[in-house]
Image (cartoon, rainbow, N blue to C red; front, side, top):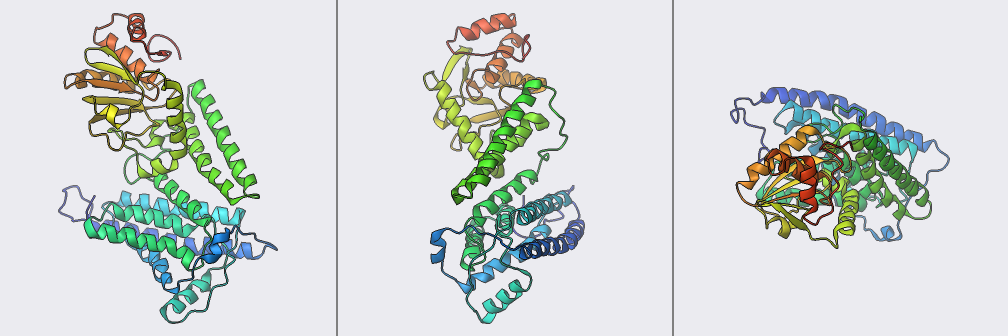
Length: 445
C-alpha cells in the first residue's frame, strides 16, 4: 500500500488502474452514501421523537466530563476524512470495500437506533464563534437521539484503519493523536454518553472484518456444511451467541456492564457461521500465522476461551514430543517455544501466532473437531518434508491431539516412515502424547 496520503502513482505498476476511474467510483459512492446517511439518520431521529418515552444509559462519572466547545472542530473533521478516504485508494475494489464498511456501519447503527432508541441527557452550554456556528449546523439536523452504537465512533474506527495503513513516521503519530481527539470529542461536546463508544467501536471493527481491504470476503461462496458434526457445532455456538445476547439485553435493565456480553455474542456468532459452512477464512488468518486487526478484536473473547481450553487440557503434559527425524508434535506454542524450532507448521485457525515469535511460521488454518479439507492436509504434509530439510519442525494445533497429529500421521505414511496408518498411529502413541486420529486417515470422523 502507498505510504503517503497522495493519490496512487499511475506509473507505480503497469497494472495500476487509472486514477480517474477510482475518482469516478468514489464520487458515485458519495452521491449515494450522503443522501442515504441523512435520510436514514434523520428518519431514526424523527421516529424516536414520536415515542412517549426514550430511555438513556448514563454512568455517574459522566456528569464530571467537561464541556470543551473547541472539540467540535475535531468532531466535525470526520466528515472531511469520510470523503477523502474514498478518494485515497489504489483500485476501484478498494473504494468498494471502504464503501461497504461505511454502509455496514450505517445500516447496523440506524437499525439499532430504531429498535433500541436512547437519548442524551446533557443540556449543552451556549457557545459563540466558530464552535457556536458548528454546533448550530449540527443542531440543524441532529437530535438528542441516535446514541448507541455511536455511528461517529464506528466511522472513526473505519477511517482510522484506512489512513494508518497509508501514513508513516511523524504523520502517522499525528494521525493517531487526531483520531484520539475525534473519539474524545463525542464526550467533550456532550454529544454522546460513554456506552455509545465501545458499542460504536465494536460496530466499526465488525465493518472492517466484513469488508477486508484485500482478499476474499468472509461469507463469499457460503455453502451449508455437509459435515453433520460441523452443523451441530454451529448450532451450539449459535446457541451460545443467543444466550450471551439475551444476557446483555436483560442485564442492561440492572447494569450497563451487562452490555459487555454483546462482544462474546458477536464472537460466538462469527464462529457459528464458520462451522455452518463459511469455513476457517472467517478467522482471517494469513499464511504466516497473523490475523487481521479486526479479527483480533472481534474474536478476542473466543480466543481467550480457546487459550484457557489449551491450558486446561495440556497443563500437565509436555508442550511437545519428538516424533522422528527432527519433526515434533505439540500444542500451540508461546513465542519462546516457537523460536526453539526452525519452522512451526500450525493448523489452528482460531489461535494467532505469538506477536514476538521471530522464526519461520507456516499456517494451514483449519477448524477444530471437524474433518479438515483434504487439500489443506496434503499441503501441510508437503510443508513438513520441505521444512524438515531446513531444520527442526514443530507441527501444532490448539492441543496437539487431533489436527496436527493427523497431519503428522499422514506425513509418516507419505514419506515411507510408516507403512500403514495403523503403524503411524502406533508410532505417535509411543511418543507419549494422547492423540485422536479420527479424521483424515482411514477412519470416518
